[in-house]
Amino acid sequence: MTALFELNKINYSYNGGFSALTDVSLCVNTGERIAILGANGCGKSTLMRVLSGLTHPTSGNILAFGEPLTEKSLADEKFAFGFRRRIGYIFQNADAQLFSPTVREEIAFGPLQMGLARADVDVRIKDLSELMGLTALLDRAPFQLSGGEKRRVAIACVLAISPDALLLDEPTTGLDPRAQYWLVELLQRLHESGKTLITATHDLNIVTTIADRAIVFSEDHQIVADGSASDILADHDLLVRVNLIHPHLHRHNGMFHAHPHKDAHEHRS
Ligand SMILES: Nc1ncnc2c1ncn2[C@@H]1O[C@H](COP(=O)(O)OP(=O)(O)O)[C@@H](O)[C@H]1O
Ligand SMILES: [Mg+2]
Image (cartoon, rainbow, N blue to C red; front, side, top):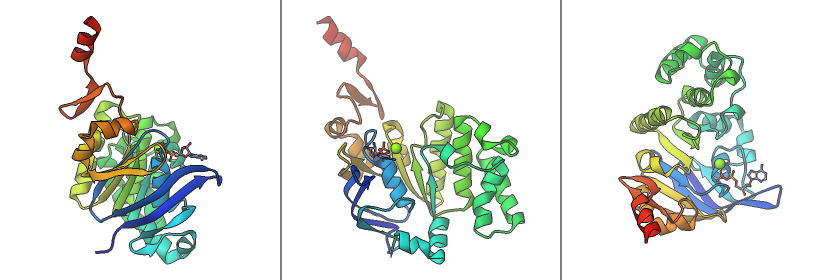
C-alpha cells in the first residue's frame, strides 16, 4: 500500500534563519487519525503547511501518494489538481482562507474549480450547509461572521471538494463548548466514512477522541514521540518535558486539571 505522506528528514527554516522543523521523518497511511501535539511555536502549523504543499521544505524530501511533493511537481497541472482534490487543509486562522462575497460562493469555489457543474455544486452547498448548520448564513459575507461560524464555513469549503484527507490546524480554538463537541462528533463521522484526519492541536482533552496516533514535537522542533494517542497522553513526564502540561496538572477521567485537594493539603501543612 502506498503511504499518503512520507516525510524523510524534513527541515524548514523561515527566512533562511529561524528553524521551525528539524529532521522530521514521518509516514502517514490512508485512514489514519493523527494528532500533532506540541507547545506554541514548536512547528505544528509549519508542518501542516508543508503537508498541504503550500510551503516546501528547506531540505529533506516529501512524497504524497508516492510522488514527490515539490514546487516542480505542483507546477504540473494534473498532479496539482489530483493533490488539491485529495488533500483538504483547514487553516489555523479562518480569515486567511475566506475571500468570497457570500458563504454560498465561498463553498462553491472549490467544486467549481474542480470542474463540477453548477447544478451539482448547488446540491453540495445544500447538503453541506445543512450538515454544518450554515443554511441561514448562505447569503451573508464570510468576513462578517463570528469566529466559530467562520470556522464552520472553512470546514464546509474543504468538505465541498470531498478530499480523502483533512489537515486541521487547531480546529477547536475559539469555539464555545457546544461547537467544540459538535466538531469532535463531525470528525468522528468523517473518520468512519474513511477519511484520513491529521489534526494539529494543543487541546489535550480532545486528543483521544479525535486521534488513534499522536506525534509530539519538542520546543526545538523535533519529533520526540510517535505512538498510540492513549499511551502518549498517559506519559505525564513527556507532556511536561515538551511544555504541553504544567507539572501541577493531573489527568483525571481523561481530562487535565489542577489537583485542588493535594494543593489545598500542601498549603495547609
Ligand atoms: N512567517 C514566519 N516567519 C518567521 N518565523 C515564523 C513564521 N511563522 C512561524 N515562525 C516560527 O516558526 C516556529 C514554528 O511556528 P509554528 O509552525 O507556527 O508553530 P505552532 O503552530 O506549533 O505554534 C516558531 O518559532 C515561529 O516563531
Ligand atoms: Mg500553529
